[in-house]
Image (cartoon, rainbow, N blue to C red; front, side, top):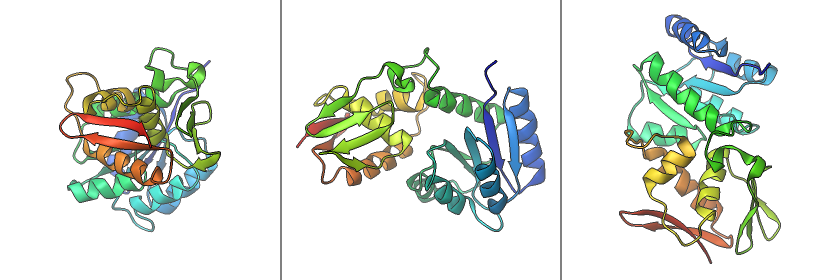
Length: 237
């Protein structure tokens, strides 16, 4: 029997925390709770967590600090959930490694939909998803001296490792499937984030991750080019 995915909810407001636990439990997930940042770190270190729903404004350690701590040891998906909805707030969370961002107040139905989308993408045994969401049959790709290994989610250039997050690997792997071809923002969001065609697209996350990838590839054999008004492409240097 396949085990249920484990969701860690980090939220200091007890009524929100309990409401999310009820809804996610009904949706078929095992749910763990943390009321502050320190408790979140303990829970994350103790249990096998598949996804974290993380509030920002919390006592002891805030959500940004928790995100940063988790990213030092894991690429587990993190959804930031907060009343802070400005562009700069989104960029800060995403730049620290958050996978997605949802602004309060939000419906439990929307959160469940986002969780399902993200877990489908990262689940290695879901054969119904796109090539990016199941590494078993994915081939190692190379462009110049840059090599992408899907089984381990590792990137190397001239045998030197380039550390990338799960999301960054998926973006880079998609672009590397067709070097020199333009991938629209919509195509990247659909393939990497799992957005459905015609859905309202949140593109700020993509902007942040592309920027981070460019920095990491600065001295590598490949570079990401922006094609104004059209999208992105990967080219050998």
